[in-house]
Amino acid sequence: MDKFNKLLVGIFILVLASGLFAQDITKKVIEVPKVDTSVINVDGVMDETAWQTAAEANLITSTGFNIWTNKYYREELTEPDYDELYGKMLWTKDTLYVFIHIDEFVNDSTNLFWDGKWTGDQLFISLSNRMGVNMMGWYDGNVYAAPNGPYHFLVLGEDFTLNNGEYSGIPDEYKGCPDDTSKIFNASDIARWGITIDTLTGVWNIEAAIYNPNVTSQSSIGFNIGGSTGSTKSHADFGDAYAYYTWQPNVENEPYSNPTGENDPGFYNLANSDYWAVLNFASGPVGVEDNFNPASLPERFSLHQNYPNPFNPSTTIRFDVSDNSPVSISIYNVVGQLVTKLVDGRTFAPGNYSVTWDATKLSSGVYFYELKTKSVHQTMKMLLVK
Image 1 (tube, helix red, strand yellow):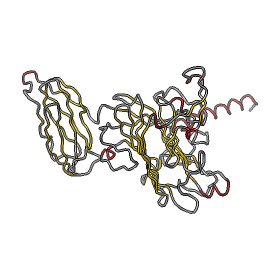
Image 2 (cartoon, rainbow, N blue to C red):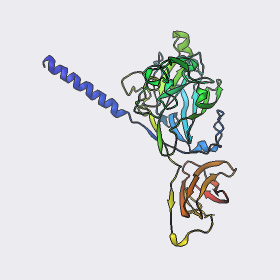
Image 3 (cartoon, rainbow, N blue to C red):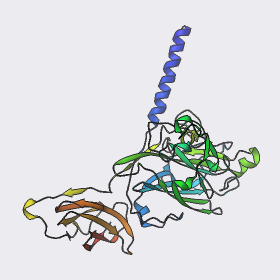
Image 4 (cartoon, one colour):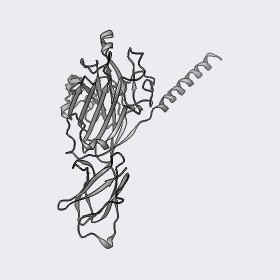
C-alpha cells in the first residue's frame, strides 16, 4: 500500500473513531415538575415533600453510574469514591430549584476538604438559555454570560460563587460599554442557597434557588453538574488534590470510559457546553382535559370524587367552572404538606374539566385534593394503594 492510500486509511479510521465516540454520547432530556414558591425553604436540608417528585440527575446511586471521571494519580481505583452523588430539580417561574447530595468516602486518602480554587472538592452547577452558544473555552466560569449563560457556579465548601468571587475579564461581546474590562460577579445577585456539611461522614448538601429568565412554562434550558473529588493523599504527595467529574457526557456504568477522547471531564463543565442535558419545563405535571358540554354549563364551581378511588398509580379528578376565574388544584399529604399543584392559577372558561394525577413516585396512603378560586375552597380525600 502506497503512502497516499495509507494516509486515506488513517483518515477513515479517525473519522470512524469520532463517529463511535459521538454514538456513545446522548444528550439527556429531563422533564422538570413545577413547584409552588412557598414550598421550598432553601436551607440545605431536603425535608420538603415536593422533592419526592422532583426530576433527577443520578450520577452515582446504588443502581449504577452516570458519571465520567478521572483517577488522577490513583490508578488503584476501581470506581469513584462516593456512596451517593445525585441532583434533584424543580421549578417555578424564573427560578430553578436544585438540590445536590454528595456522599464521599472518608478513608485514608479521600475525604471532604477545601483548600481554595482548583484543589480539594469542587462542585460546578451549569446553566444555559443559549444552547447554540458555547463557552469561551476559558476556565473562568463564563460568568459574564450569567444569568442567560452558558455559565457555571463554583461551589467550594460553604462558598457558593461565580468564579470564586475573583475578578473576571469581560470579552468584547459581553461588554456593556467599551470601558468594561473586568468585574467581580456576585452569585447572590442571581441565586439563594443553603449548604450543610458533615466532614465526619463525607456528606455535603447544596440547595439553591437560581434565577433564570428562561425558566418558564413550555420552555427549556441546558443544565449540567460537575466537580472534583478531593484526595488528601494526592494533596500530600503531589500538591494536586482533585479528580474532575461530569454528569454529561458519560457512558452509562463506565465512569472511566473517556467518551469524547478529550481525557478531561472537567472541560465539559468549565469550558464547553456541547453535551449538557436539556431541562424541559411543562405548565404542570399533567394536562387538563376540556369536557365541554354547552347544554349543561355549571351553575357553580364544584369538585368531584376522583376515579378510580382507591387508585394505583393514577387517578382522574373532575371539576366544574361556572365563571372566568383563576383556578388552582393542589394535592396534599395526610399531614398537610403540599405534594404538587396540578393547576396553578389558570383561568378557565365556564365548563367541565378533568385532570389526571400520576402518583407513581409516591408511597401508599391518604391524600387530599383541593379546588381553590377567589370565592370557593373545596377539599376531598382519595386513597393511593400500591
